[in-house]
Image (cartoon, rainbow, N blue to C red; front, side, top):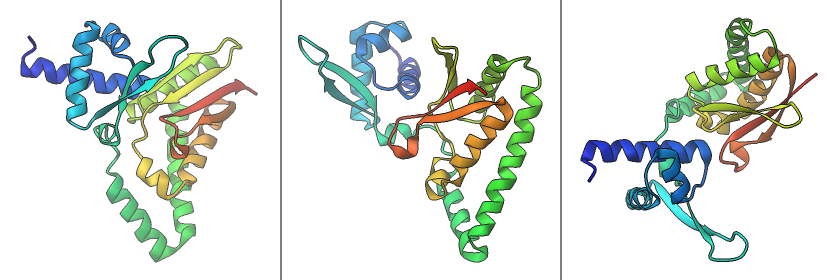
Length: 211
């Protein structure tokens, strides 16, 4: 039997897995975390009771529908949001006091600062694959829970499973446009956003191809 500390650790690992990979069956979650499907299901049921996880059925061809588990809004809220409420208040105050141009200037300054930092870090890479890998590492350190993969056609998919500035980006979508431009500049590649949290996706994803 798990003690309270071990149970908490298991719960945290399950929440992190659902955040990173999206909806999972208990058997798959258990396989990743090194436990049986039943043990994973029991932990997931406890997370449902806490309001952090919910289950749903999904038809998968012939046979019984599969039961999947995913984070609720409260579950997503367990991950840091960069003090979203305060950020939104500050943005609203700047907009009201100094106008929309001041918001645009703030975004430009943030973009310049991020671009300079990223360029210094990415200068260590000799090619596009290296730059993509370093950018994913940097974004993970910044709280975006980023990862990347190489596609069959040689392009790259950069995925951000969390957005620590989501509240600010919802209030002012200029942040999202700015990040897209920054990625293109520092990667020296074409970048297309293919999934967007603000449009209802569970994550943001970027398709990266050479110019």
